[in-house]
Image (cartoon, rainbow, N blue to C red; front, side, top):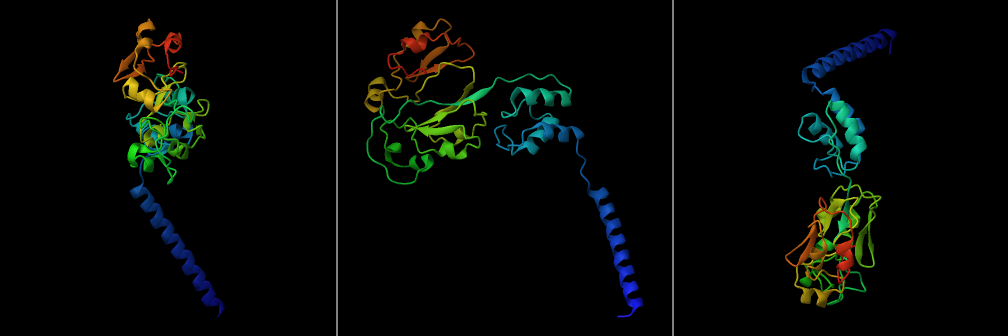
Length: 263
Protein backbone atom coordinates (compact mmCIF):
# COMPACT_ATOMS: atom_id res chain seq x y z
CA UNK A 1 0.00 0.00 0.00
CA UNK A 2 1.47 3.36 -1.06
CA UNK A 3 1.52 6.50 1.10
CA UNK A 4 -1.11 8.29 -1.02
CA UNK A 5 -3.63 5.48 -0.38
CA UNK A 6 -3.04 5.72 3.37
CA UNK A 7 -3.57 9.49 3.34
CA UNK A 8 -6.75 9.24 1.28
CA UNK A 9 -8.14 6.55 3.63
CA UNK A 10 -7.38 8.70 6.67
CA UNK A 11 -9.03 11.74 5.05
CA UNK A 12 -12.14 9.74 4.15
CA UNK A 13 -12.45 8.36 7.68
CA UNK A 14 -12.08 11.87 9.06
CA UNK A 15 -14.69 13.30 6.67
CA UNK A 16 -17.15 10.50 7.44
CA UNK A 17 -16.63 11.10 11.16
CA UNK A 18 -17.30 14.82 10.79
CA UNK A 19 -20.46 14.20 8.71
CA UNK A 20 -21.79 11.66 11.24
CA UNK A 21 -21.05 14.06 14.09
CA UNK A 22 -22.95 16.86 12.34
CA UNK A 23 -25.92 14.57 11.63
CA UNK A 24 -26.02 13.36 15.23
CA UNK A 25 -25.91 16.95 16.47
CA UNK A 26 -28.82 17.90 14.20
CA UNK A 27 -30.79 14.82 15.28
CA UNK A 28 -30.22 15.52 18.99
CA UNK A 29 -31.59 19.02 18.56
CA UNK A 30 -34.50 17.92 16.43
CA UNK A 31 -35.62 15.08 18.71
CA UNK A 32 -34.54 16.26 22.15
CA UNK A 33 -37.08 16.08 24.95
CA UNK A 34 -37.21 19.05 27.26
CA UNK A 35 -36.78 17.99 30.91
CA UNK A 36 -37.81 20.29 33.71
CA UNK A 37 -34.73 20.95 35.82
CA UNK A 38 -36.82 20.46 38.92
CA UNK A 39 -37.48 16.87 37.89
CA UNK A 40 -33.75 16.16 38.05
CA UNK A 41 -33.42 17.89 41.42
CA UNK A 42 -36.40 16.01 42.86
CA UNK A 43 -35.07 12.70 41.56
CA UNK A 44 -31.74 13.37 43.26
CA UNK A 45 -33.51 13.72 46.61
CA UNK A 46 -35.48 10.48 46.28
CA UNK A 47 -33.77 7.44 47.90
CA UNK A 48 -33.64 5.34 44.72
CA UNK A 49 -35.14 2.16 46.16
CA UNK A 50 -37.69 1.93 43.31
CA UNK A 51 -39.93 -0.03 45.68
CA UNK A 52 -43.20 1.17 44.16
CA UNK A 53 -44.62 2.07 47.56
CA UNK A 54 -45.58 5.50 46.24
CA UNK A 55 -47.84 3.95 43.62
CA UNK A 56 -45.54 4.73 40.70
CA UNK A 57 -43.20 2.48 38.72
CA UNK A 58 -40.10 3.87 40.42
CA UNK A 59 -38.31 6.98 41.62
CA UNK A 60 -37.99 8.42 38.10
CA UNK A 61 -41.73 8.14 37.54
CA UNK A 62 -42.48 9.65 40.94
CA UNK A 63 -40.18 12.61 40.33
CA UNK A 64 -41.94 13.30 37.04
CA UNK A 65 -45.36 13.03 38.72
CA UNK A 66 -44.38 15.41 41.53
CA UNK A 67 -43.15 18.06 39.12
CA UNK A 68 -46.31 17.63 37.02
CA UNK A 69 -48.43 18.14 40.11
CA UNK A 70 -49.84 14.62 39.94
CA UNK A 71 -48.22 13.44 43.19
CA UNK A 72 -47.67 15.07 46.57
CA UNK A 73 -44.21 16.20 47.63
CA UNK A 74 -44.44 13.70 50.47
CA UNK A 75 -45.46 10.74 48.32
CA UNK A 76 -42.28 8.75 48.99
CA UNK A 77 -42.86 6.44 51.98
CA UNK A 78 -39.19 5.54 52.21
CA UNK A 79 -37.88 9.10 52.40
CA UNK A 80 -40.49 10.24 54.88
CA UNK A 81 -40.63 13.77 56.29
CA UNK A 82 -36.95 14.72 55.66
CA UNK A 83 -37.19 13.99 51.92
CA UNK A 84 -40.63 15.58 51.76
CA UNK A 85 -39.24 18.85 53.14
CA UNK A 86 -36.36 18.93 50.64
CA UNK A 87 -38.66 18.26 47.70
CA UNK A 88 -41.11 20.89 48.95
CA UNK A 89 -38.28 23.43 48.94
CA UNK A 90 -37.42 22.53 45.34
CA UNK A 91 -41.06 22.85 44.29
CA UNK A 92 -41.52 26.09 46.21
CA UNK A 93 -44.40 24.78 48.34
CA UNK A 94 -44.91 23.99 51.99
CA UNK A 95 -44.29 20.47 53.17
CA UNK A 96 -47.53 19.10 54.56
CA UNK A 97 -45.54 16.41 56.35
CA UNK A 98 -46.70 12.85 56.71
CA UNK A 99 -46.96 10.64 59.76
CA UNK A 100 -44.57 7.73 59.64
CA UNK A 101 -46.34 4.44 59.09
CA UNK A 102 -45.31 0.82 59.42
CA UNK A 103 -46.81 -2.49 58.39
CA UNK A 104 -48.68 -4.50 61.01
CA UNK A 105 -49.73 -8.16 60.82
CA UNK A 106 -53.22 -8.68 62.26
CA UNK A 107 -52.63 -12.16 63.63
CA UNK A 108 -51.51 -13.66 66.93
CA UNK A 109 -52.07 -17.27 65.90
CA UNK A 110 -48.65 -18.71 66.65
CA UNK A 111 -48.02 -22.44 66.49
CA UNK A 112 -48.95 -22.95 70.15
CA UNK A 113 -52.26 -21.07 69.87
CA UNK A 114 -53.82 -22.01 66.55
CA UNK A 115 -55.37 -25.42 65.89
CA UNK A 116 -54.12 -27.62 63.03
CA UNK A 117 -56.61 -29.34 60.71
CA UNK A 118 -54.10 -31.33 58.62
CA UNK A 119 -50.44 -31.38 57.67
CA UNK A 120 -49.52 -29.60 54.46
CA UNK A 121 -46.68 -30.67 52.16
CA UNK A 122 -46.16 -28.51 49.12
CA UNK A 123 -44.95 -25.13 47.90
CA UNK A 124 -43.77 -22.76 50.60
CA UNK A 125 -45.86 -19.91 49.29
CA UNK A 126 -48.94 -18.33 50.83
CA UNK A 127 -50.48 -17.47 47.46
CA UNK A 128 -50.33 -21.11 46.37
CA UNK A 129 -51.68 -22.24 49.73
CA UNK A 130 -54.68 -19.96 49.25
CA UNK A 131 -56.23 -22.36 46.73
CA UNK A 132 -55.73 -25.41 48.94
CA UNK A 133 -58.90 -26.60 50.78
CA UNK A 134 -59.23 -24.71 54.05
CA UNK A 135 -56.41 -22.37 52.99
CA UNK A 136 -53.74 -24.53 54.54
CA UNK A 137 -53.09 -26.50 57.68
CA UNK A 138 -54.22 -23.90 60.25
CA UNK A 139 -57.87 -24.21 61.23
CA UNK A 140 -58.32 -20.42 61.17
CA UNK A 141 -58.47 -19.43 57.51
CA UNK A 142 -58.41 -15.69 58.30
CA UNK A 143 -54.93 -15.61 59.83
CA UNK A 144 -51.29 -15.82 58.82
CA UNK A 145 -50.45 -18.93 56.83
CA UNK A 146 -46.83 -18.60 57.85
CA UNK A 147 -45.19 -19.47 54.53
CA UNK A 148 -43.50 -16.11 53.99
CA UNK A 149 -44.72 -14.64 50.72
CA UNK A 150 -44.48 -11.28 52.48
CA UNK A 151 -40.90 -11.99 53.53
CA UNK A 152 -39.87 -12.72 49.95
CA UNK A 153 -41.10 -9.38 48.58
CA UNK A 154 -39.68 -7.17 51.35
CA UNK A 155 -36.60 -5.33 50.08
CA UNK A 156 -35.73 -4.04 53.55
CA UNK A 157 -35.49 -7.25 55.62
CA UNK A 158 -38.28 -5.85 57.79
CA UNK A 159 -40.58 -8.87 58.07
CA UNK A 160 -39.89 -12.44 59.15
CA UNK A 161 -41.82 -15.56 60.11
CA UNK A 162 -41.60 -16.16 63.85
CA UNK A 163 -43.33 -19.21 65.35
CA UNK A 164 -45.65 -19.52 62.35
CA UNK A 165 -46.68 -15.86 62.08
CA UNK A 166 -45.20 -12.93 60.15
CA UNK A 167 -43.72 -10.26 62.43
CA UNK A 168 -42.69 -6.76 61.31
CA UNK A 169 -39.59 -4.95 62.56
CA UNK A 170 -41.03 -1.44 62.73
CA UNK A 171 -37.56 0.12 62.83
CA UNK A 172 -36.72 -1.33 59.41
CA UNK A 173 -40.15 -1.02 57.79
CA UNK A 174 -40.57 1.84 55.30
CA UNK A 175 -44.29 1.27 54.65
CA UNK A 176 -43.83 0.46 50.97
CA UNK A 177 -46.89 -1.80 51.16
CA UNK A 178 -45.47 -4.74 49.19
CA UNK A 179 -46.13 -7.21 51.99
CA UNK A 180 -49.73 -6.02 52.30
CA UNK A 181 -50.38 -6.39 48.58
CA UNK A 182 -49.01 -9.94 48.39
CA UNK A 183 -50.81 -11.32 51.47
CA UNK A 184 -53.73 -13.49 50.21
CA UNK A 185 -55.64 -13.06 53.49
CA UNK A 186 -55.25 -9.27 53.46
CA UNK A 187 -54.19 -9.22 57.09
CA UNK A 188 -51.30 -6.76 56.79
CA UNK A 189 -52.16 -3.08 57.06
CA UNK A 190 -50.25 0.17 57.45
CA UNK A 191 -50.63 1.79 60.86
CA UNK A 192 -49.08 4.87 62.50
CA UNK A 193 -45.61 4.25 63.90
CA UNK A 194 -46.74 5.80 67.19
CA UNK A 195 -49.60 3.30 67.61
CA UNK A 196 -49.05 1.25 70.75
CA UNK A 197 -52.31 -0.71 70.82
CA UNK A 198 -53.27 -2.86 67.85
CA UNK A 199 -55.77 -5.65 67.34
CA UNK A 200 -53.84 -8.83 66.53
CA UNK A 201 -56.66 -10.61 64.74
CA UNK A 202 -58.30 -10.62 61.33
CA UNK A 203 -61.12 -13.10 61.89
CA UNK A 204 -64.75 -12.26 61.18
CA UNK A 205 -65.97 -15.56 62.61
CA UNK A 206 -68.29 -15.64 65.60
CA UNK A 207 -66.73 -15.97 69.04
CA UNK A 208 -67.48 -19.67 69.44
CA UNK A 209 -65.94 -20.53 66.07
CA UNK A 210 -62.93 -18.33 66.79
CA UNK A 211 -62.21 -20.22 70.02
CA UNK A 212 -62.44 -23.54 68.18
CA UNK A 213 -59.78 -22.39 65.70
CA UNK A 214 -57.42 -20.25 67.77
CA UNK A 215 -56.80 -19.38 71.41
CA UNK A 216 -55.74 -15.83 70.54
CA UNK A 217 -58.56 -14.55 68.33
CA UNK A 218 -60.97 -11.65 68.81
CA UNK A 219 -64.34 -12.99 70.01
CA UNK A 220 -66.23 -9.75 69.36
CA UNK A 221 -67.30 -9.40 73.02
CA UNK A 222 -67.19 -5.57 72.84
CA UNK A 223 -65.59 -5.24 76.27
CA UNK A 224 -62.95 -2.99 74.70
CA UNK A 225 -65.55 -0.60 73.32
CA UNK A 226 -67.17 -0.16 76.72
CA UNK A 227 -64.00 1.12 78.42
CA UNK A 228 -62.73 3.37 75.60
CA UNK A 229 -63.55 6.95 76.61
CA UNK A 230 -62.46 8.32 73.23
CA UNK A 231 -64.75 6.01 71.23
CA UNK A 232 -61.67 4.99 69.29
CA UNK A 233 -62.43 1.29 69.14
CA UNK A 234 -65.46 -0.36 67.60
CA UNK A 235 -66.55 -3.90 66.79
CA UNK A 236 -67.74 -4.55 63.26
CA UNK A 237 -68.55 -7.98 61.86
CA UNK A 238 -67.27 -9.69 65.05
CA UNK A 239 -63.89 -7.95 64.93
CA UNK A 240 -62.49 -4.99 66.89
CA UNK A 241 -61.08 -2.05 64.93
CA UNK A 242 -59.09 0.94 66.24
CA UNK A 243 -59.41 4.46 64.85
CA UNK A 244 -55.85 5.72 65.34
CA UNK A 245 -56.87 9.33 64.81
CA UNK A 246 -58.85 9.06 68.07
CA UNK A 247 -56.71 6.62 70.03
CA UNK A 248 -54.68 8.15 72.88
CA UNK A 249 -52.81 4.93 73.71
CA UNK A 250 -54.36 4.84 77.19
CA UNK A 251 -54.28 1.04 77.15
CA UNK A 252 -57.68 0.47 78.75
CA UNK A 253 -58.89 -1.66 75.82
CA UNK A 254 -55.84 -3.92 76.04
CA UNK A 255 -56.26 -4.33 79.79
CA UNK A 256 -59.94 -5.23 79.45
CA UNK A 257 -59.64 -7.66 76.52
CA UNK A 258 -60.36 -11.16 77.91
CA UNK A 259 -58.34 -12.95 75.23
CA UNK A 260 -55.47 -10.43 75.27
CA UNK A 261 -55.60 -9.97 71.51
CA UNK A 262 -54.90 -6.22 71.68
CA UNK A 263 -51.17 -5.70 71.53
